[in-house]
Image (cartoon, rainbow, N blue to C red):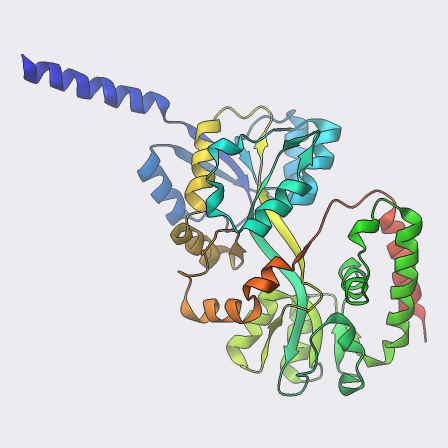
Length: 352
């Protein structure tokens, strides 16, 4: 009789566990939910995962079309949350008590919470991140430590960067200004742009070429035609594989950072599975698996410890803790700034 009772109890518990298992419909980027991570999550939690790969524009379009339905967890960049939420109401506030916040790098968590807050509620926490900064050949350009050092006589004719917002922003910070703080004041932002424009025109003779694509700048650095450039961290680490003198450098005024987040759609129906996934993938050992897949690091505290030794060494050389804490995270860009920036970039390009 006791055995029958025990077996019945086991059966009830099993049925209860099955009933609580959910299917997580995940809207994410390529590489962010590799098959081996999904398999481990499903085995450990009982939840199932359906992965849909997308990008920022498609994510917003899909969630907008369904009023925040169709998915249980999405991964838009942090600057695609507060604005779309205000306009379309496509997310639900996060319950931070269900997230193991100790798993996150504190500075990234606080920056993302701040940039994804709307009407007092937090809508996003960080996952994958990357930066734009400097790629430097230390054998010939060891003095390049900040964006404005690209104007030094020592690298005349051997510099490259893009005619994009990142260049304007980086130079502004290196010149002692805070362009992000001026986003809400068009006149103040225009004043910053005018000063940066003058600086970029002044040192235009240092520029070998304005690059457009990642392969282009990597080839210029490989050939030695360019010895210092503004570019992405992953590009610098890839170049370092072939030439130990070339590596990514976080500028002294701060690298410019982007973060892809976790956000829960307004009509998601598997919140338990969503929070379970967030906590699972932020574990350092799981974060390392995602870094190996995506190529970028995560906001997991200690997540770099378990990646392959070569990539870990490159990352740690580029990002001591003070450099991570000094990253300037991109906030939401107010309407109208693109016009001002475009005009400044056009004048820089046309200047003789």
